[in-house]
Every structure is written in structure tokens, then in C-alpha cells.
Image (tube, rainbow, N blue to C red; front, side):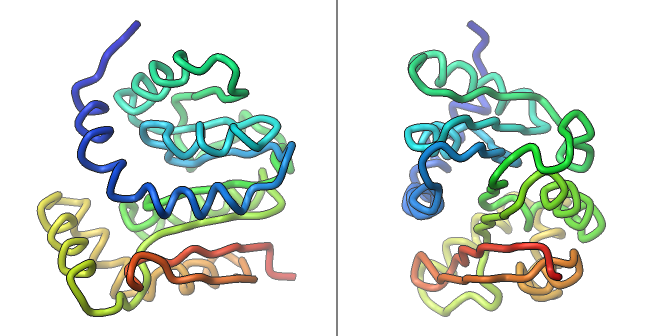
Length: 203
């Protein structure tokens, strides 16, 4: 089976930092829901959700992440989860309302504003409910904030530039408004560094 060093790095160093956040998102999924995990990374959240959900589809634009996710899910054949190499700005392979819920964790801050709106537009087209977790804006001061900012700064390049834009523009709440979505619940996590939101189409 294929192997990815980048995927291994994420599994060892990144995934453990956000396990608590993923547990919270997974706890919001009810039995037998059909779920799409957008920008699923190593598939850690998808597989956690699959323990409850009826079917989970994880998508990511990174081949390294999909290779890693498929490798890990192969060890748990009892889970109803699959992984696809897809661009989240174009989910035309899925019909409107194909899923009950679309989830995404710590992905929106990585995209430029135009891309985020395209991704959210596709998510709200294919799912009735969105659960999105990302950085709180503003983050609460403290060691957790300092660590998070240091990690983002170390990523450098477009990643760090997009993170700064995300924070400057107002984070998830501004993005939701721009995308025609209403936040129906919000919960701060990780010492106020993260925000878990439930969104629905703004009627």
C-alpha cells in the first residue's frame, strides 16, 4: 500500500494537537448521518465520525493526505468511510443535498478569501448542515494562542498570509455571513483559540 512521509509527519506532530477539537466535532454527528469531511487531511476526523455515522466521505486536494487516510482506514475495514482526491471548490460530482452534514476542521484559514467562499458555497450546496471548526477570532490571549500563531508563522508563505487575512477579516463569523450562512451555534474550545460552529443556509 502507498506511503507518504508528509502524511506520517502530520499524524505524529499535527493530529495530536487537535484531537480534542475533532472529538467535539465528531460528538455533534448523530447516528446514520451521511457526512462529507472537507479538507480531511490524514482522515483522523473522518474515521472518528465513521464510528457513529452511516457513511463518511473524506476529500482532500493533497495526494499525500489521501494516501495516508486510505492507508489508515485500511486497518479498520469495519468503518463505512472512503477517501477521494478532490478540489473542494468543485464538488460537482455530488448532487445537491447529497449529504446530511459537511464538516471541516482547521482548513478555512489556509485558503484565500475567494477560495473560502467557493468552498463554503459547495459545502452548503451538497449538505443541509455545516459544522466548521477553525481559529477563534480574536483568539483569547495565553500560551495556546502563542503556540498556534507560532505554528502558523512557521508554515510561512501563502499559508501564513492566508491565516493573517483570515484573522484580519473576522474569521468564521465574517466568512459565514459572506457565504449566505447563519451560525446557529458557536462554542469556544482550546482555551479560546478555536471556535466550533454549526451553520445553516441563511433564509
